[in-house]
Length: 533
Image: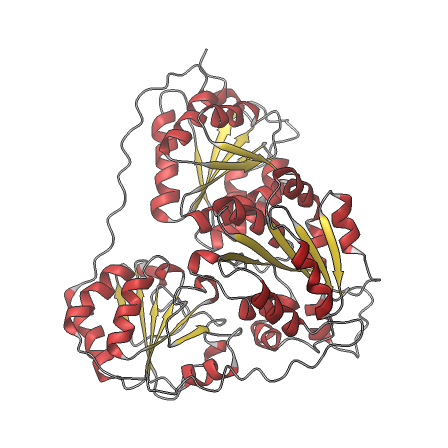
């Protein structure tokens, strides 16, 4: 007999899923096997939270919706931090979760799954029965893929067991890009023409549109920068300022502040991207281009909003604008980013900037960089270059620590042709340590760099030396030994010389570097972050 669970797995495979992640329990056993039988690669993780973030990172890096398979009740609750991160980031993610039968009112697993899902901004959906299963699955898939939403498709156990037939998969055409109105394009063309110092800031919605934005920036003399999630969008452009906002280097921050026009391309101008407005110069005009009407002006007042697809809007502007120098003057970026010397290292502690810069020099340029959250996070974000926007995976919308390791796994599976490098703190790594087993089992070529300050460093620096910090500081832990216990290679790094371990690493398996970092007194970006608290 073919069941609804069998049909759901087969349909998701036919719709284009490539990988699914999860922990298998009795409630999702059959649908997970159906996914595997449909050719979907299943990654069994050690915790549902790790599975959720792996699926999220896979989707961000590959451009294909991620799939997550969960048991009912506790399986879903275990995954909720990762689901919340994906929902806040508008990641196209389909969560297949079992649910209790309507009649099982006293089941220990019973919770209001729809309400839980809704509370974190994800979209609850449901398979209602054998007669509607195809429509229910396709509706959920389209919402995830085309609406860039995290969708939780509830599969009640009694419905899963119903007999069903797998018919033809309904056609699911690709969405048509939102074309901007003529008047809005004309107004944007006029704003760019009038600007003497334009800066383009590419955000999440600009990913995939780098070439046309580069052409437009070169023609109009605009400097280019990105929000954190779009790092790499303009790699190689001679007037690329890197990340705008808290991670910006001093030179980039000054130039962005000096702009008379800021155009956010798929960028919502959050407090992070504009340093709570302090990167907006006096008299600077703000323009937003976004295919989500609700995003226009959502975070701060803007002078012009253009409702349209980033690529279509930029292409429509090109024939209307003439070549000009604008902000792109010779010698503008001479003199370097202005970080200053790296002088915090001691005999047994390494400066996190020097560590990051040396890793950038030693590692191959074709890489994917994943970053966990914490005091350290600006160092890999600012100092490790990436070849393009697919090379940076930044699961930070929910600001949870502990997501980095799973992020790296999902990104590594999406781009096996690149070396994946994880920057994480000791707190985040130890919080997610169970997934080191998943790393070892999969045999991933992964470099795990632990910026180890034996503390929850953000809290240490935020509350300061006068506070009782005993709850957020810890004895030194041999994290390299922890990695070796999971069957990985591990090494402790206290000086730049200790990085010679990279010379004997074959890059075909995982290596963890437990870098004992010097006290930075609170990273430069942390002061920016806590302005929002």
